[in-house]
Length: 120
Image (cartoon, rainbow, N blue to C red):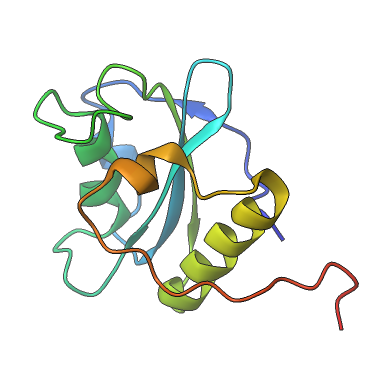
């Protein structure tokens, strides 16, 4: 199941409204298209509160996100790696590739399985 939360427009300075929990998130462009799927794992000091704002920072190195990232949505999830792989797999199966922000990133992509739409 994809993330079910509605998109939220990123506003600098509202970072405290984000939870400091582990989880997964999607970054979207102005049209609401997913351009990056990420996670806040055990190595992030402040979880989603740290990772989401970093994608909107002027210092963001990913060219697919820099200047295009406008929206975000997230899901608090203790099994963030499993959920991250699930979201990437579903996106790839629907679009034929992973999000362009993930492809342009220096971060390694996980090995993606085959998603079975019938649920079996």
